[in-house]
Image (cartoon, rainbow, N blue to C red; front, side, top):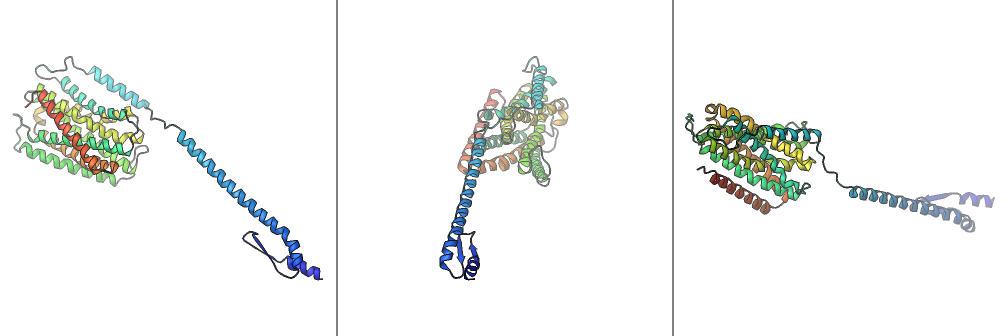
Amino acid sequence: LNTSQTAHRITKKRYLSEGQQIVIEGDGSNASSEIGDTPQRQLRSVSQTRSAAKKAAANGADKVASKKTDEVAEQPRQPPTASKATIVGTVVVALISYFTLPDSLQPVGRPTVQHVWYYGWISALSTGLGVVPLIFAPDLDKYWVGVSNAVAAGMMIAASYSLMAEGCTFEEPDDKSEISSSMRTIIGGVLGLCFIVGTKRFLEHHEEYHIGDLAGADFRRIMLIIFVMTLHSFSEGVGIGVSFGGENGSELGVFISASLAVHNVPEGLAVAVVLLPQRVHLLTAALWCIGTSIPQPLMAVPAFIFVHYFIPILPVGLGFAGGAMAWVAIFELLSEAFEDTKSTTTTGVISSIALLFMLWLQNSIDDATHIV
């Protein structure tokens, strides 16, 4: 009976924290030491085995994750490829450039429609040159994207100033408008600012719009810049056509076309800078840049043919283009440059140098063409 009671009391065991400790109730310390030693050692062994297994599993998982991370890091980043549509578009651009080339690029006497078209076309093609700086550094980090935006912003501010100045000083014998050219230019500038602000608000209230993987803030910013560049190209095309159709058309038209071609390069850079981080091929980005200036040759021809109808509205168009470009340069490109470079001094110095260089280049073209 005593043996049975002792065994019964010994089997009343309470385990704490998965068998780490055994409490034996009852008498018979000899029996407890003889019987309790074996399960205690077993439970400790089981606990140690489980702990070791957990550590091994954790170490194995860390090694696997580290190995996968290393494999991903070692894999080279695949460069974007040109699509079939991009190749076809490039061929079309090359064919147009070849077959529409006039016999004599410099107009002799009164310019022809072919001259007007081709100078507008050259101006549009120059926008594609905006991707050239990015050929040497296609994978820009955030800092250099900010530097590129600062350069584009400075040049576009200079271009906006030139457009506004051209509109305010516009004089043409066939201009019969009773409103001064300066007032018409200011009206156009205000309309351009209002239109751009309205366009931005429209895009902000339509989050569902997207192109491919582009959505949200990236989509709104890209579409706003492309839309502004395309829209102001209409007024620049009118400027080309009117300049060729007015007095001293051969010289003035060449000067205006060359000036706009120079202005288009930073505009192309602004478009390319927002497209390339989205893994867009350089050739595709160049076509997008050219596409934003396609309205220039398209509008130059009717403005040249119906020059008397387009002359009064030219200052309005120049002001509209200047105001829209100034808004994009200051509130989009320049603000993005501040955020990316995280340096007000760097952004200010770079954009100022770009602005001064653009103004110097504009004056050089003016002197070279002997237009006063």
